[in-house]
Amino acid sequence: MTLGEFSVIARFFSRPVSPGILGVGDDAARLSLPPDTDLVSCKDLLIEGRHFFSDVAPATLGHKALAVNLSDLAAMGAKPLACLLGIGLTAPCPDWLGDFADGFYRLADQWQCPLIGGDTISSDFGTVISVTALGTLPKGELGLRRDRGQIDDDLWLSGDLGGADVALRALQGDDKISPELLAATRERLERPEPRVALGQALLPLAHAAIDVSDGLAQDLQHLLKASHCGAEIQWQQLPLHPMLQTLPENIKRLAVLNGGDAYELCFTAPKRSRTDIEQLAIALSIPLSRVGSLTQAPGLRLHHGNGLVESLSAQGFDHFKRGEQHG
Image (cartoon, rainbow, N blue to C red):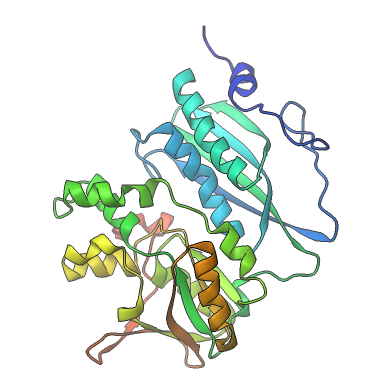
């Protein structure tokens, strides 16, 4: 049986939602904001051949499509509320759609972020996925905005860096990345874990945050520019994916400083929060590394273990300069 637009929606994207929510099946969704909250929203677009490979497992793609949006909510300290999905398909394959929906819904259920609407269309240019995620902050709470970093704040990173970039290089044919290393890092690229609980827990402890999606050097400098300050970071304290140690220094450096798709949180916090943040890392079982500090002097400087200090430019992924990028 050939699937049409409405049968796709009914079969794969019409699961029950909580009472009081008008979700998929009407012209628009309706939901009530929890009392004393403000609305937070974000959107990410994923395009076949640019953001994901054609042979990626559909359940994995469903997970990532929502995860990259939840990561943006996490960077604000927001609590997920609901999401909308737009998807363009060259042909509606039932097995593919079923697996994609399962991966999407598993993550949505994990973070109580129900799918409440969207759109499904035919695409002549491969699979296109657009997700809008909605979240909430306590009424009047500014959130972990990029412009709230303060001079002398500690600079922290969650998780580790470089694994996703190494996996991407391997899938693009870099023969310096072994099959064993690809196997150990591929999940970092295709199944990022949004730091939702961490973002919410940091609201009383941290000042500013950003998720590392386009490379640490580039994303951090967005935060520094918004906060009108600079930063010093220590190479020896940066949390490298453990499997990167076997790689040549130039590849390791690019992966850690410029590699995208990490979806870890980079955040700033006052020194008085150090103990609480260290305890939070234990409570959430998430590694949190203190990697530097914010400075009055502008710019981003990397301190090497041999005493060398290097100024870093904002290199990372840019959709409109992709010929200049490594990823």
